[in-house]
Image 1 (cartoon, rainbow, N blue to C red):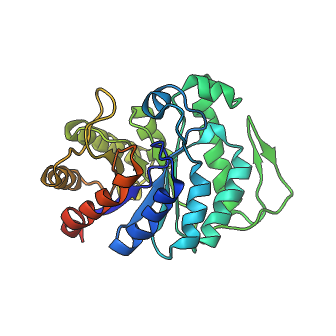
Image 2 (tube, one colour):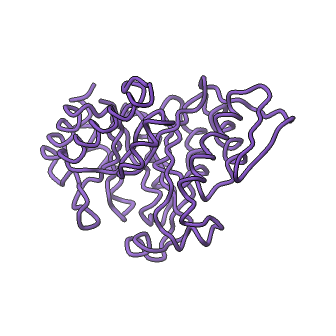
Length: 293
């Protein structure tokens, strides 16, 4: 199982340099990937968590990280697709994939905060349809010499689109979300499923469902690997699952995830204090990472 780490761009860290330093140190320590999250407004559970403290834009953070690292994967966990014009996002993502040498992993989701979606001009009830169309458009633009699409929200033809991503056939798109609908979308069009932390029993059930749905779509379940985003410490919200505080507990829970077939675990230090980011990373590198090399 591969181990990635969240850059904590979503935790209200006041000094952005503490986030940026985390990426270079994660590469030095041998982590698989670094990940950044997305919300535009501090609203709902985001506002409850960080108040008016900063929530940094993920693709901007990852572009900086691409310039200061060489090999580590760069993931979004996750972009809310209904916030984005998919043609513009395809251009931005392809450019980032090129400048990073083919390191981008695009985690995407439908969004859950109605107030934020409406503010972004994206009707809450249409978010699933918008997401499906956005994924289809990005794949078309990334893979076709003469891209063309006639859809409900966007239509285009007769124009070239460049650059194409370094990764072939295209940048991996992994589907965020814990719902059965998210699992079905991953099985249908995803290059992976990327839920937030679930308890092992629920995750095991969802992984079985993912395999069933992938086969129903005519796909090998191995084409849809599972990567889980999980926080350390105490779960931030009731009903959420966390890896715990003690290094031995974190390792044990990580190994349980591996035994269920999880391909990658993305760990968040789950702290609002920038000074705690590097110590948490060093602890993971010492106590957890060696078990998965």
